[in-house]
Length: 53
Image 1 (cartoon, rainbow, N blue to C red):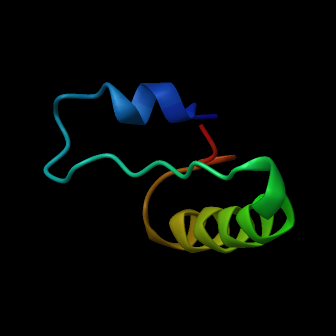
Image 2 (cartoon, rainbow, N blue to C red):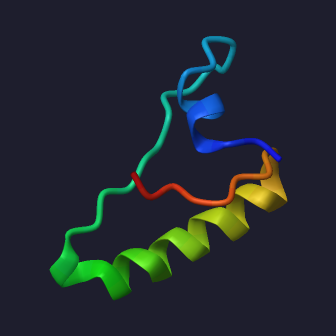
């Protein structure tokens, strides 16, 4: 399991880290976007469980 902080602070990656900040009023939309991003990331490289910060 790779944690989001491991990816965020890994200096060996070639791309900028991606994080998602969802305000309380947009929590449902933020969770939907987060779920999509996590599924996409599982298909690419990492086993990320959330992008929510």
